Image 1 (cartoon, rainbow, N blue to C red):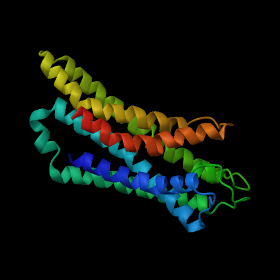
Image 2 (cartoon, one colour):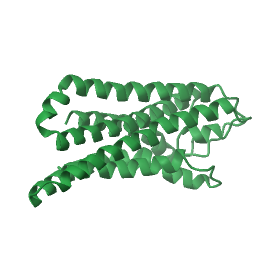
Image 3 (cartoon, rainbow, N blue to C red):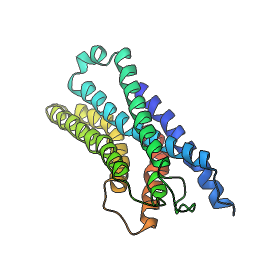
Image 4 (cartoon, rainbow, N blue to C red):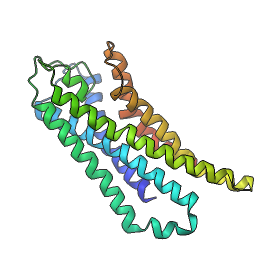
Length: 233
């Protein structure tokens, strides 16, 4: 439950960075935000989202060890190792978010009207006066490192997990193993599906589509995580 605690805390921070502003914009006619507030919101959303990408991969490895190497689990996944893996997730997410936010805020903007619910980085960058190859490369590299790479590691973990489960002779044992992974796999599909659609897609002409996708991975998925894990456990 150590990683679940980290995931829950991260989801609280994630939703706290966007939902209050979203509710204010929906309920108030004054839809404004100061520059520092926008920068903070952008950083927190990126940091929590990036951290979740890495943390979900770490949790997949945790499930792999628990199912494929159950007798060695207490040794491999000791308390110290779990803390180190969680720390790597947080540091990676916070540093990549700092890099993206820092360069995004240096871009000259030709406008102050963000066509989005929150200060989402892609929506803010659409206000840039000129395109920046450096910014585009940073976004691409970070997106690849935090989306396809962790997703590949998750897929590899589940290939070994599935292979082990299919070798279990009893139906009860297979069912218990599948149940152990069910909640995590559901969260992975929801989160990565939405995030991949948002950050590794061709430029969309529909801003409304981007808004719906960002709500899915930035608000709905973090809110559903506790429900999914509670039902599966």
